[in-house]
Length: 172
Image (tube, rainbow, N blue to C red; front, side, top):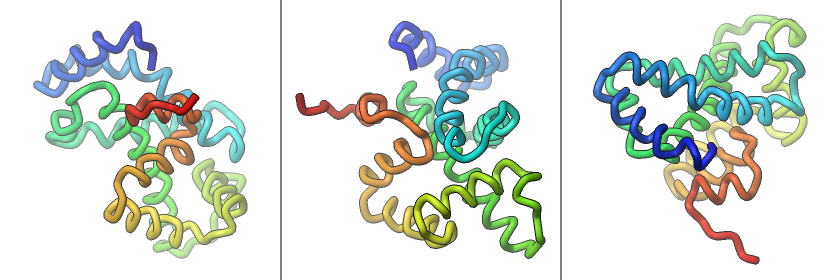
């Protein structure tokens, strides 16, 4: 999220939330690289290749296409970006639950989201469903801590980027 584009992004958010199609297209174009960077950081340690990053970004942006969602989160660029990162988190959680529910044997090499979920399970030592449940509980009990974890772990943001999004000053 470059400061140079922040005013333009906020204006596009408001116009897109009001249903202006061209503004929504311009908004997605402006934020796309930032979202790809966040998705790349999430997937970098887990999965290699462009398709996975693109898929995660597109799946996340699809969440904003539902009626009224964009308007609900169009307050400013930081809110929008935070919700987009949460959408990435939810895409991975939903994919895991769908896969588990279907009880299919899926070749981990064939699906990038499966690879990411397997890598997360390996890195954390937790079952992904247990991790998702714990994150949901944390979001209810302490939304600020949940946001921190979501931005750092699922959004792949640096400490400095997370501080900016959460509007927190870092100690010198």
